[in-house]
Length: 343
Image (cartoon, rainbow, N blue to C red; front, side, top):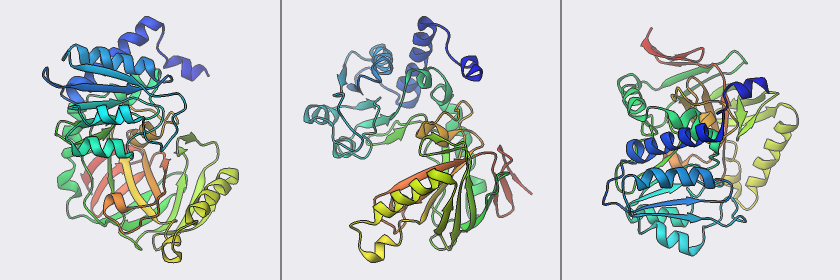
């Protein structure tokens, strides 16, 4: 508990000022809002202070600004009220500061098709807004992430190890994704905030070895690591106490209703990535944990969003600490330090 108090914002005034500073970064740097643009902030009772800071920051740029409050009963995966969805599609910029994600809703998809630029911040709270990954210099982060491209291009063989026991190899099945940098300045573009990670699709059937998740799993900080044994891209066993049993149950439930040929793919290792955000902290928030600089993560389940063939309707991620990531003759990360250098 003492460690938490060391990083907390002192009083209400300091917190509000820090939140407003981060909100200005979202409005001016990430979304690049212009005076003639229409902006909508969507918030809910648990995130209303964050929403207010975003509203205030946007109102410094444009007077075409609205804020809507989601109902308290809104749950993960549900569509927002029709009035919210209708407003979203009429905006130039939409800022989603809500407890539950709206990223995969029809309302968000429709707004994107209509050209809205959208930033989604699911699970954001006042401390996250005032500190951590939200306070990063996103222009610098974009430059650093794009600068990795020469190292990543045409190198496809990856090995990942960690002090906790991870040791896996795989080939990449698509290009490395370098767009998760927090800059969202094109019509129809969507970003999650806090941002700052580089990720890739492991080529199906190429990943084998042991994955030890010792940071967090789906937003839960771990006291005991989760261990996945993987053969030819598929998880064959999970160990690590009660959480391992719970993960196994979730994967088993995900098979229900799928065709037999597809049900067997639920345990696909679907994604690999590593964090680049120097301000992010391991807090138990799904988004922030994945962008912590020098951490790495694996995703299990659906890989269709990255161009794979596995469509199973579930995707879960776990974060590892202090990884070493080797890519052919390049050391991308060594013991949790970004190096990106040839051996």
